[in-house]
Length: 174
Image (tube, rainbow, N blue to C red; front, side):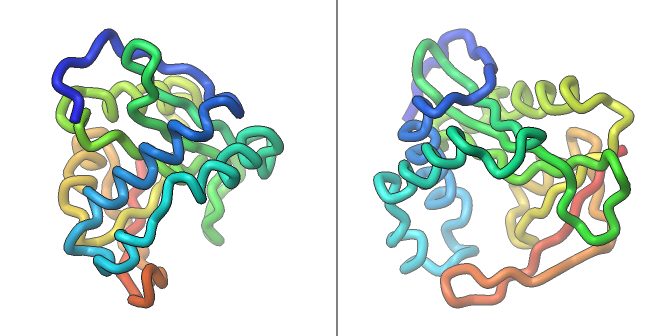
């Protein structure tokens, strides 16, 4: 748990950030999705197992136009966001998608997610359409997205997570 944050800086992630990103990713999932995603699945998440995936992803990346930024307090990574071209079937050329945005749970409520979101919007442009998918039962995240100009657009899908089919809602901005 983070008691006091130093000044937060945002920069593009590097391969050397893989372990810290994996740690934040797992801790955030375990906290944010408690009571939404099956407990056994959340308990099975292992940051060490995800380090290699993140290292490969950051080194080779799926495509050059997909970017991951990290938020740092001092020299500690406390959050990250990944953005790239929308993968949705109805996406238009130039539409962007936030694939993930996660923070260390100890930093929630300190403006770090806001800083990451502002970095994304600043990078892609305030008039660019940005979409993202959020679990329907994740009210905290849905509220955050609405505060940043995203609205549910009526498109929904089910995603299999931990052996359960969970409803996701698409949000759109722009």
